[in-house]
Image 1 (tube, rainbow, N blue to C red):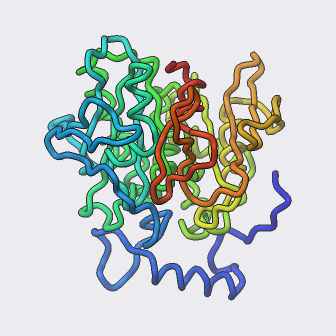
Image 2 (tube, rainbow, N blue to C red):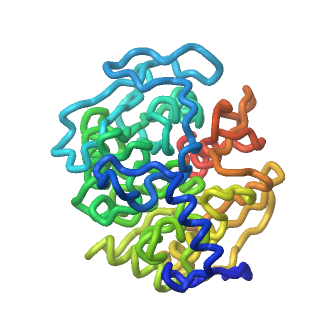
Length: 368
């Protein structure tokens, strides 16, 4: 799959130098609020203490308007309460463009550690595209009570299974949004950055029946923390499994569901030292296996100067797509400006690389 050497998944077999590095990171990284104060819980945030934390548009508690500025949406982000039993104790925000008719798509956008719902929706470009193309956006919000770093708990077994924890809460938000807006159930998509990318993989695996497609930005394959024996190993080293083993994790999460499976697009920076790019390769293995196709791309080209690959199924339909963002570190790719293919605005861990991930996903999902 990749010539990059990797260490065994079990922490006990790692070289001492790697264990020393991971121990240092363990001491530096914040931890879930539910963890015992004397011990760090595993992987509370992909980005660590200096991860995505620049908040430019605070999520209003009662539907207040976002600040004016480039790329700012015209309507308001509002909080929705009472959307279900909410076993993951998340908050639900949403953006619905003025006059949105029924039958339109829904995009679920999951923020990274230290970010908030509306800030990520604005900076990533999703809200401006919602106004431009006419769809609604669900913006799940993490709370400090769940995770002191504001990270979705993509690594906790109790939050990544169907019907449980944060995954179930997000699924309930989707049901509420579809009911309230009369949205097209066949055109619901999910995407997210970093910890939000990890949770995007969770939603695609645990609830494949809810989503037509997903966009994973600087994220990880489903079940990676469990496969590696540690979220830290997963993030900084990677978990080496066969395509079938990765696919089996998705099939186990989906239970009796047998398809159709959501199409998956992955964006990852080649200079990402927070979540190693090997995770994109493992995501390709996982989802090509789920779709029953091989790991050889059917299309290899460049988009905005960045390597781009497309993997098709036997019917010639694109089912997995990757963008390897040359020289980009850990973050959400955007391309600020007023051009047709431009969207988003720069912020901490929202990076101008001449390609807007939200636009690329939106066109792939026919939101335009």
